[in-house]
Length: 94
Image (cartoon, rainbow, N blue to C red; front, side, top):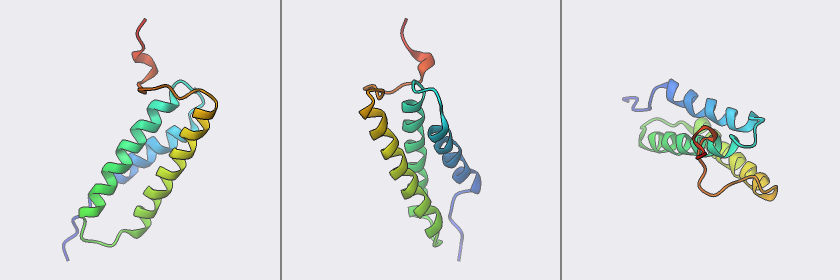
């Protein structure tokens, strides 16, 4: 069977930004990191959907990561820190 799954580096890529979003201490940066992590996780899930191999563990990790990011967004929203239209803090208009 041919392995059509994307390179391991792509899975590490989503995981790195996901961890960064969870551990970021600056509340101004968190919404942007969440958005980027979600984008990379969804992209990776699409890649795995096309793969011919059974990659259940990573698919489960992707679902867990999206669930955790959603929880983080809910916490931020409850504390009034999640702005509409997230963007990186360095790109704010002055």
